[in-house]
Length: 78
Picture 1: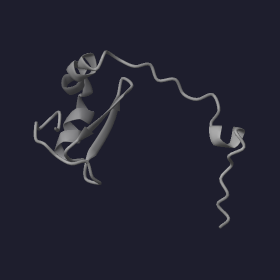
Picture 2 (picture 1 turned 90 degrees about the vertical axis):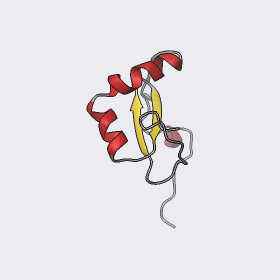
Picture 3 (picture 1 turned 180 degrees about the vertical axis):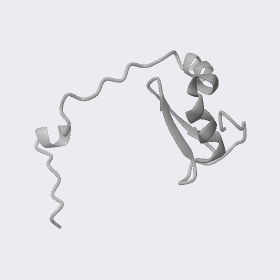
């Protein structure tokens, strides 16, 4: 269900995505609903974040390419 419009929907390429306080939210469209959230995320998402247990700290990886450091380099020559 879209947290903005309240309509049920299936996630597809038209769905809007927005990350906020360590949580990822999906909306029914990348137009109207996503635009509203992007303009004022706290107004629309603070209550949902609290329901989900509060903000989540997001720590960026110290290694910009963890796959390469594990010997998992990508071979894109094919």
